[in-house]
Picture 1 (cartoon, rainbow, N blue to C red):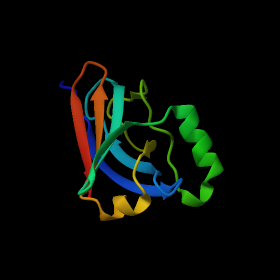
Picture 2 (picture 1 turned 30 degrees about the vertical axis):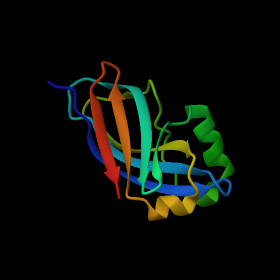
Picture 3 (picture 1 turned 180 degrees about the horizontal axis):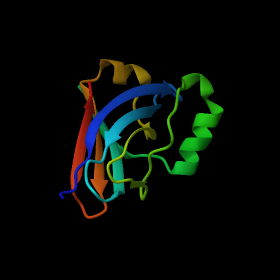
Picture 4 (picture 1 turned 60 degrees about the vertical axis):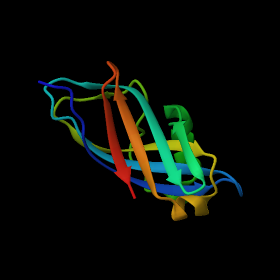
Length: 130
């Protein structure tokens, strides 16, 4: 069986200042393999006419604190984070969080957002939200 991760992403943003936002990434993923998928790294890239920005997702505890402090921006799924294990054959929804150096309007005017999930052994999987 090969390492694989299937699914899709939906990205929401929440302005944290005039020049920064939080990217709230809702993921629906399936691990069709017969063994766990161990997450090595997760990044969020926002592309716009004014440039691109790539950021690692927030640590699990930071994301959970953010979710608790901003329930009005939910709903939130369990946190998706580096070093987590996605069970064999499992499908589930998860939420990741990344601080991005763009105002919220730039996301709305942007081209697309991609989420890259890298398996612990280096294989990358990319999911897009337009």
